[in-house]
Image (cartoon, rainbow, N blue to C red; front, side, top):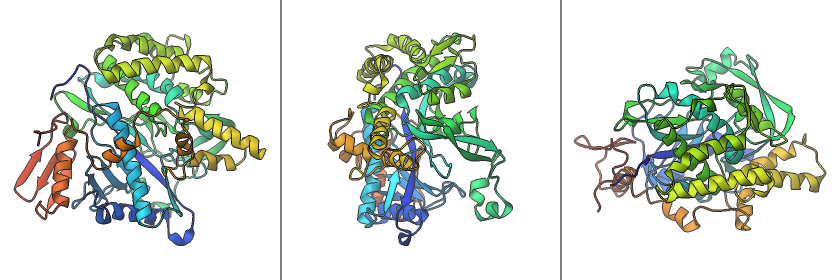
Length: 486
């Protein structure tokens, strides 16, 4: 299949929070397990893993690959449900595939009769427990031996300021304290998986100094780059595994991000990142964009109540996040005309930056942090509450409910108050149909065979290979190869 300049594979992993309102219905962990079983054994939307992908984090039967090319599984760290989209090459396909994963979870809840008592959320923080959940972006990048030395310092300024349009918004804040809440020996023995390979354990306190901020994750990021991230969360988590490599390209794993409910914000977040990665590969980003202190800037931008969003460059110059984003946008204009997605991103990137400069609060139809702020403010006014009220955290949470019949965000969408990138038919199709132009199509073909009983009794699926029985092996090392037309 033909590849355009800058063409790459990308996908997103989302960890879901689970809340059980009726204690008689069991624990969140049991609800997660029930949803997984309904999906694979009752609805048969995928092939359950017969083997352990990881003896600790993904034992056998913890999940599997789906008919739509994605993967649904229980991550043993925290026992949460996680959905990884299929490998994608265009923004509309990615958004549809991502939303399809949410719809599958909701369908399983309805099938199990749990819809009224169990809720799943694609938020990124537990306001009261202090936990944070991931929404990780994966991009195939052309990475030479020096990529991790020259590229990240010029990527951090973009990622740190990207939250002005990609942030999902958050009531309140957290303070991290090293050593506070360090687990006891008894706790570690009862929950060993949570503490394997941990280099740092921290405690979390509510920070009442900030009423509302752009990002749910900014308060929890401790490093710019780190390999072990369970209690050492970073902006970038390198994933230089050989089985994700292809033709000189490697998987870049971004940890600082969060799950956008708004499709437009989701597509813009990924689309702008695709263009910036191409700029970095071609060494078009000048060194004078480096930040003095990326982690400090991350929190300062998120917490700025005046929406000035000032950051300090390594040179000592102070620049606003909008202007810094414009610097990247100006460089990316070199790619104008390269394709539909590229032209859409360039136009919308500029439009959003213009809107943020005029009045950010006019962008509620496109940006999650603005829409949520308006919902919370309306509730505060109706109930006569101040920002210290715990009830606001519940409103924040319900914005991220993935059930269209319950979610505050979906109520806005149903009223036509959001900009969409896909329609409901796209999402419905993506529940069972894989992307047509990546290896996900080939993998999904074999998943369908296994579910139809045409495969042998034993099988094994991975991102880069499929094994059926003892003698049949299909190499999927090229993520761009969608296989022969059937």
